[in-house]
Image (tube, rainbow, N blue to C red; front, side, top):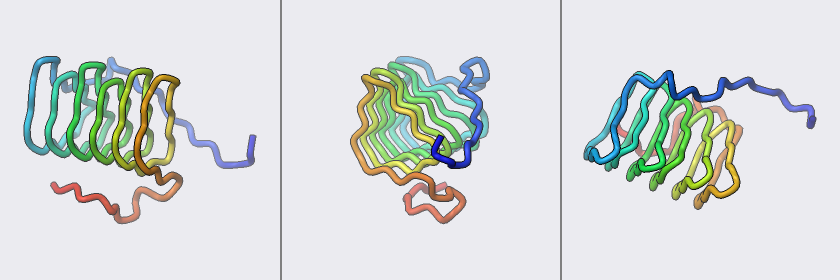
Length: 130
C-alpha cells in the first residue's frame, strides 16, 4: 500500500512447540533454547532462542529475551529483540523492543521504547549474556 517491501511471516503455530514450561513451574536462571518453546510458568532470567517463543496467558518472564518470533499472551518485564513480536489481547510487555514486525492487538499493554526496521544482524545494544 505504501510501496514498502512486504515480508511474509508464517503465523505462530502452537502445534510446533517442542518444549514446555508448564503453569505452576518456576525457573530462575538464563535459558538457551533451540526449539519452539511455550512458557506458561514463571521464568526469572534472560532467554535466548533460535526459534519461536510463546508466552502463555499464565506465563510471566522477568528478564531480557532474544528470539526469532515471540507471541505474548502473558506478562514480560524486560527488553525484547526479535524479528516479529505479537502482543495478544490481555498481554503486557514492559520494556524496550527492537523488532522488524510488531503486532499489538486491542487490549494488550506495551510500555517502553520501540526500534523498528533496523537490521537485527547489527550488534545488539542489549546486555544478554550466553
